[in-house]
Length: 143
Length: 187
Image (cartoon, rainbow over all chains, first blue to last red; front, side):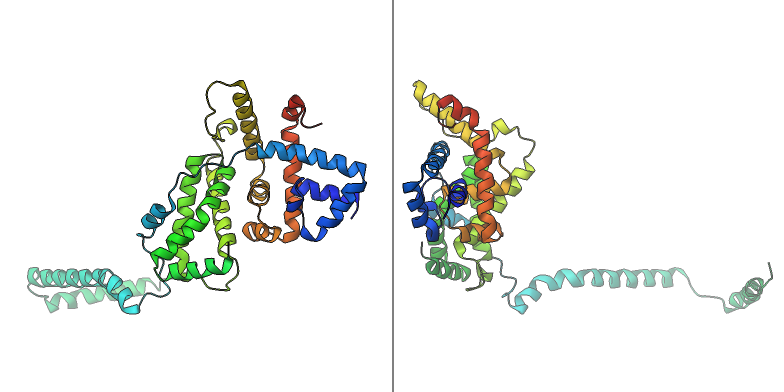
């Protein structure tokens, strides 16, 4: 222990020796007992401590029991231990709903198209074939 | 405060034991509130932070693992400090002079007013410190946590705690120098 180290201890923990690192406390006190400069450093640390100590501890407004009772009404995070069945019952319905809606919509649309178009004349399809063939040839033209 | 007892209370809370949780709150509410008040300089804001912190204790208790690392008290201090720092970062636009909120002085006496002014100055100086320096002073000087506990709460090495404290106290000495000169307290 030297004055430089004591200065560091005082600068970090203040003047009260019970706050100093236990392993160095006795040596620091011994140095203080014999060194005038160390004693001056201690007085300076005490002055800052005195200012810091003027800040009072705030009076507690919260009641622990009522706070605990109120908070423990809330759900805990149990994602790791929630049974799989419980998880399924919560999420299954929302997940399959879009599929059911889509299936129903497709069925209605199909029924409506089939109802409103009495049939397809196969001769019209035959008439369209050459044009389709022409388009295919156009794609091969060299421009 | 026995850390092993905290562990048992935390594990019981995780099993939904509301009485154990209430005991845990009773054991830690005072210190948690003191840390939050000194970090924020406002009793009202500190109350909100403390409630949020204990809600996290309750909600996270089921996933708390014995011997999983930090003590309950250290973990809780870390939660409080982080919530306070987050809150201050969100409220940076608030003028510094409005940050501390100390009890009203008793009416009348000049001495009381002088003491209150001094308290306000100290509170402002504390509020002006960088977040981690302020947290180190609050945990170490005001709450008496060991360097290992401060290191755990701030997620820094034990060796870094001392240098953080040195910087913090030197800044405070500088910020309060004029007050100290007026009162003949500091040279």
